[in-house]
Length: 483
Image 1 (cartoon, rainbow, N blue to C red):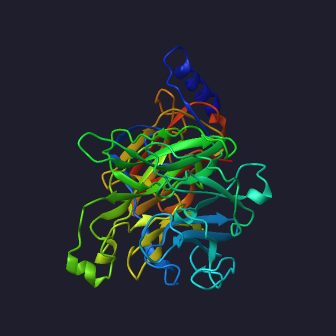
Image 2 (image 1 turned 90 degrees about the vertical axis):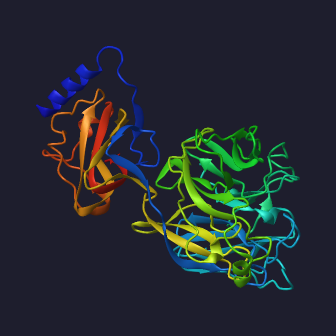
Image 3 (image 1 turned 90 degrees about the horizontal axis):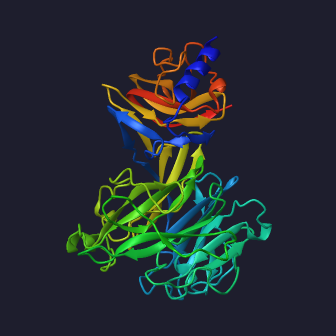
């Protein structure tokens, strides 16, 4: 009888014109990273969570590494983790001959080793971890990815883009991520006006867009300011022929220098591209000359500062800057209040049953340069947060597939989460009202939501419904419907 009554209520609510349009989310996981599916929030907020610094992943102490290692990329390939980065011990012209591309590997994303590969002679030795050298300017910003396109040839499982404004972006491929070759000599993204290509130019196969996407450095003019480091994107069906660059929009967010954008599909919700970007503050000097001398930073690299910010996109030419504040702050001590420090590596990867990690380039331009791992809970970029007084958020109408609703959440001992399911018009559905919702208390990556009569919601699948999350001294990080 309850199922029949639910169907009648929903049909009545949807008959006639003016029913709100619903979003088909299937069984996708949704994160509280933007307001894409949120219609209203009352008493609650979207809260950004800061990753926690852990151990040093790499100390950049080999003779061919040094103070100016940069543009790190971390890739998880099944049971192994791969790490790539520019290695060069001294400052100098971008794309010069003494730049090389180094490689490290790990079984867990935590303990890393630098294998002796013997592929290239650098500084008089082949006993090194170099995977590309002697091909300037491509080691300046060599940025690989694991190609997940269905049917990709085994010899091209790994791809990369590299180049500078003079050369454009040239494509490379590899079967194992260690031995690389050019896919073709001509650039796939040629030199163009306002396109600098002088930082990390990244690409990936988008399963949601069904094509390759590339994000790269451009410059944008604003009245009364010097050109601002910006982001543009291009797309391709085959990784060889690319569309004309399209400038990204940040909506009404204030213009800021994005030195690297680090846009990539989040591995648990690949329809959401997450950017752990380096925000550069040119001319914002923190250190005195004496403080700079004490940490032995290169004299040209302490008159600016930078941190990391978080923004997202769901494809297309718009970023969503839900959070303007820093995602990763420079931290205590002068070592990271210098130019071009605190730049995140490309990609966030899972490193435990309930943990994911990102990696941050620290102590740039100094003898102590290193890459540090930062940890977060799975989906833990941001949350729907309610304080002790409580608050709520209601989604716009969605259509789902699945039998149960699952949430990733955390409460205090006094806190709670409750979920109500409404019809498209916002009327609570019988059996799924807030009063029917079983109070959820605890801290779990995956918790099934239940009501008085159980957790089965399969009879609502395919119908437009709204979710009402009520949170007290609690956070909800993500939600999805599943079998």
